[in-house]
Image 1: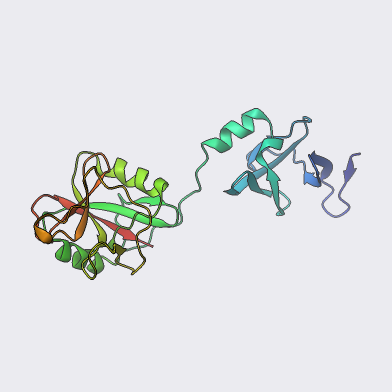
Image 2 (image 1 turned 120 degrees about the vertical axis):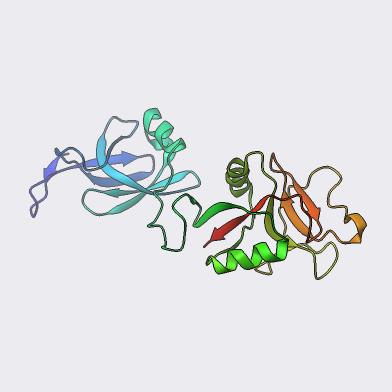
Length: 218
């Protein structure tokens, strides 16, 4: 059944997903977001708000948000969503222009040979902190940013041996230690560096190995 909205006089049609019956606004104008197609061939225009698990939230052209199963959309739409990334928010003034946005935080690499402590202080003066890696997705982003470089991260066990924490005090529960690490060489290696390739190593505070550090802004 097709009907006209009595207020806007715009065409409305039911856009039906499995177990979901919603009225999606059909708009004849172009450029108002992507045209989405369900597996019954019905279409609606709107933009992606977010993806959570197997569902996508769309903002339709009638300013209504709807959450629908991704697998109820056409294969073309599913492919589009598999590569979709949220648009970064406006970059804060203290964050450098080359910083990368990921999952609510900004990241950059500072090339500067320094101690772990001075790197942490420098990151703080920049308005951020040494980067934390708490999941695989963040690790993948920072590994790509680092390339062949060895860089300090914001983790240590300086307070209690083998009790690794990020600088926000949160215990580290997701690790990417290199083989044989951490080994606390010389009984003074309490600070995490990311090696080229993404694996972690524990080093002493004054180690000359890292050529710089990651800074994170939340």
